Each structure stands twice: as structure tokens, then as C-alpha cells.
Amino acid sequence: MAKLLAAGKGNADMIWNVDAGWLFMAVATVGGISYMLALLLESSIGREGFGPFGNAALITAGFFLAIYAANHQGIRIGELKHALMIGLGGSFLLLLFVLAVRGVWARL
Image 1 (cartoon, one colour):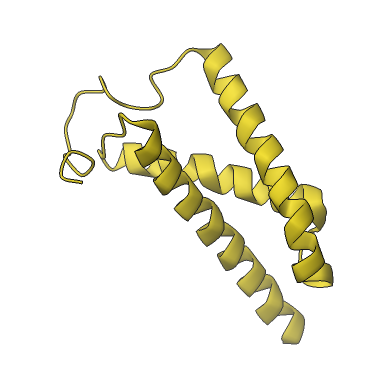
Image 2: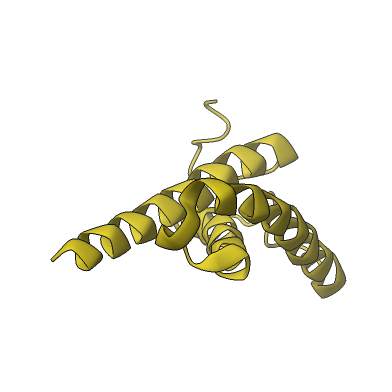
């Protein structure tokens, strides 16, 4: 865990140091998995959500925004399991935040 939080100026281990093709495949993979998850969440969330495509877009955006935010703060993410932990946490935090704001807005 100490290696995960080691801040540094070098970008040698940053996750964004990938080719455009790999980044496209990563977005496509995360998008596909998040769509399947959004289909399952649709039965639980129902009308309170944004539909399967909207929920999948939020999950995918939260995944990559969390990794980008961690990299921007200087957290080195050199291993896939660390990127998955940070990305999953960010995706569900974004989905929770947006659904909570929508729920509060609907009840005002």
C-alpha cells in the first residue's frame, strides 16, 4: 500500500502511459462490463436511475475519472489491481452521488 501512495514527479508507472489502442480497449471493456452491471442495477433502481445506458456511462466515467484524479494527485498506479480498486471506488462514488442528488432534487 505504501507503494500505491508514494507520490512522485515521474510518470514511469502511471496508468495513462499507454498507447491509444490500449486505452480504447480499456474504455470498451469497462463500458461493456458497466453496461451489464447497469442492466442488473436497473431492476433495483428502477425509475430513480438513468436507464441502463445512463448508469453505464456514469460508471464508466467514474472509473476513469477516479484513476485520472489519483494520477493527478501523484499517486502512482503501476499494477492493475490498484487501478481496479481505485476505479471501482470512483465509479460507485460517482453513481451514488448523482443518484443522491437526483433523489433529493426530485423530492424538493
